[in-house]
Length: 237
Image 1 (cartoon, one colour):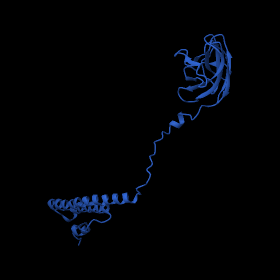
Image 2 (cartoon, helix red, strand yellow):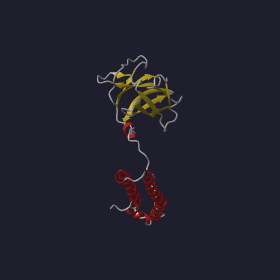
Image 3 (cartoon, helix red, strand yellow):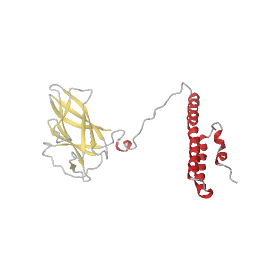
């Protein structure tokens, strides 16, 4: 003869064990068994509901004790952590950032061309080689950075790149300005009104979609009596 369900679950009348989750699982399993047996042993609907109510009450009695055990566990873990433990904060890292952002400017090749004016110089539209540029000297301190295609022809890159020109911190008398927002690859350098000298300009070309670059080079301008008289690419970095 099958022993009563209450005797099968007698362990739940004992103090809370160290495995309260397992005890609740057992109660639920026995409830499932009880529901299954209804069709075999002919329990009345009322008796079935009363038995279910009894077993659910046992689960309800277990839950507060579980909370107490969890609190004791939390306190024990806290005591195990030394008071002088250094806490470390881990910063989140965007895996895409290293793909789009370069650590430092890339190497490039630059040739200097002197032309009568920047607007008169013929420029092609099309694909430019990566890291190969032309620095146009249009006179009167005006300059433009162009790309170069595989055939060595100058290519307008103003729609795909942006230009940054930093003045020489060792010679603040020489200043740099943009010529026209509509021509982002052009700039003008202003020399002091008196004296002779030179200044190093750091030129950086950055692709708008960050697919290549940035590229930079240092160009040295020479001036005399308020006029820019020459520019040479001093170094490739």
